[in-house]
Image (cartoon, rainbow, N blue to C red; front, side, top):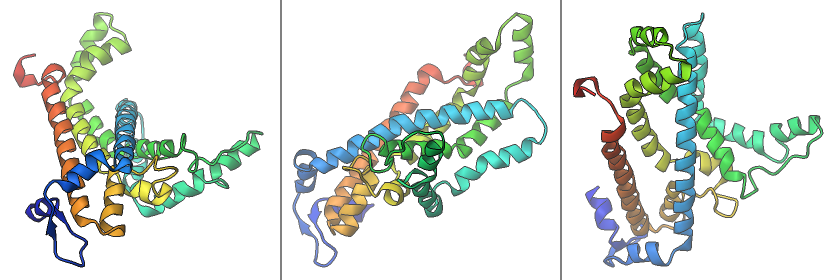
Length: 266
């Protein structure tokens, strides 16, 4: 990290020695590089869309699996499989085959008489193919939610039922407050992984179309290993670290208002 911090203030292309240029990399990044800001916008759009959808979907599936029906272990394993293989190159290639012009989705639309789209090549739909892939990888947060749900005493729900509370009221008044520490944990983990998303965009869309899926980590990779601007990439890496630290700290700070711990007496 110390070497990376030093390189962020240098002009370094791997082949020659680093040359000290002060804050020039940061000045270029913030005021002269339009593609940098495109990558920032794409990353923020992805993070603030994919993370809420993934957490909501994971919580919904966890509550479904917490109802106690038969073969629970099998269903749990089936739902967790996408998280094991979802980040792999093989799945990313499969995703290209599904959403490509001659892919499975367009073939299914043709069967019902609908015209397909170039989902990966359209600026309006390209990023959504990656968001859907992210939501599909809900297994890890789902398992954590499920473990949290099993820690809620059933007596609370029984007492609420006696008082006439319906399913929605139980969810709002019992499930969410008692599950809030688990929600905070999942939220922080997903924020960190969301800002570092790379493989899916690298393989599925390559950053296109029109840079709408060129996420921060992918643009950083381009600068470091395609343009050999190691100093600039190091500066980008430190800004990304500060962005993640800011939103992680924000999540912890906001938790004072919505996270309830049994030891706090709330």
